[in-house]
Length: 259
Image 1: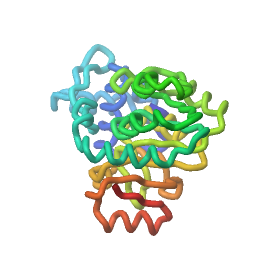
Image 2 (image 1 turned 30 degrees about the horizontal axis):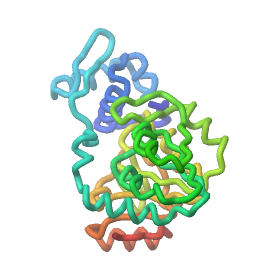
Image 3 (image 1 turned 90 degrees about the vertical axis):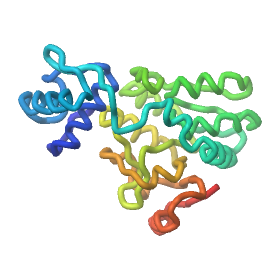
């Protein structure tokens, strides 16, 4: 969680507390108050409310054990829209040229493109996802570069300043990322403030950013703005997406590809 420059309203503040504890397993009242820019008494009230709702357990000096979150857990996301994600992954892989360097972030939608990368000659893949590393390791002709950082165990992804610093060492042709939400006005949005800076840096590491999203992502918006609409080069989405929303994205300059 990066320090917040403007005070958050109650619901958003509590959401960020949930995301923080989900990422790190626990959190102290003092640290969370500092990061959110509010008083410790405000954080205590929020934590007590979250405990009353059964979402966390209060411990001495803080809280732990988030039982729920704004984003579905990974096992649920893996089976949701599986067929659509496979089509999206195939379409995304078709945009990768031989002898290119690409960045692929973790996520169930971006991981759907991995089986289609094996035949691309001279490909180098950068990633902060250990799942991506594991699945690509079977392809001996793909060079894999792992960006270091703090391990987020729930997603098996690496984040933080070490991840960001590693990006400066490479010339990346294009980046591929998933999304919690894609909005014509807000752009690419996420739910976890502690990952925001890492996600922003990954998404802006290449001249071209391709977003992979099933149609449900166009109907939701997270609290963290990751990339403005103008920063999205291409959106690949399944044919279940709302045509009016897609047109608004096109009007904003995004190349939209349905599959």
